[in-house]
Image 1 (cartoon, protein in one colour):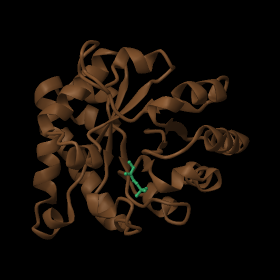
Image 2 (spheres, protein in one colour):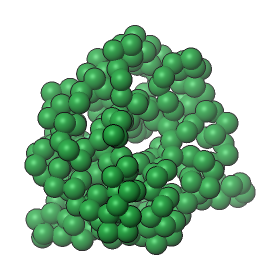
Image 3 (tube, protein in one colour):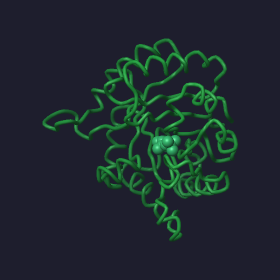
Image 4 (spheres, helix red, strand yellow):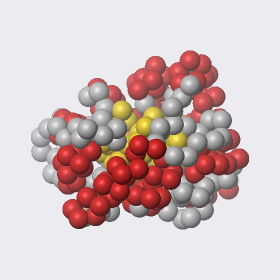
Length: 248
Ligand code: 13P
């Protein structure tokens, strides 16, 4: 049985003040939550969030990492650095990084490997653009994104990888994938993993991301192959995020 996982991707949002309010708000409702909960703030707030969630069941994630362990890489952050702040998860291959910062399938696979080599759980994001969906390429695109990772780290590594299916057209647009569309994509991903290893396929968590909110979380998370959510906008409001954490 796969436990529900809800992760908040705060993206480039928050301030010292709002972090306190958001985390304290989330903590106030955690006694009613049975899902695994992860929050992923920007790097400057990792230490603050680490302190606030100490002694709680909330886990800490980062939004990116560099594949190098140290050196002359101005502006970049290594696995060792984020681990010093209690980070256990790291988002890799988000569509915003793929499209705005040129992250290729090959680089994303390297980042997954770096995370795994450092005992961090990658939250591997995959998903198609609107053009790709309309051209009937959804499955081909997602397969290419996942196969690049399988080729580098092997399918067995997926016992330590969380996948997030995030159709690009649904991110930040208010246009959520329908439960049928999302379930079909999730089943496709699970079947793809199953072609290499059925046991891994059945145990891999596949989260949905893209305009998931308090109102639609339940109908998505209760789909057979949807194991939780990666939440953007709605993770910035404690009440909404908690509602999603209680879904399923
Ligand atoms: P929204 O929930 O704001 O659509 O963002 C989803 C996302 O990109 C999570 O990584």
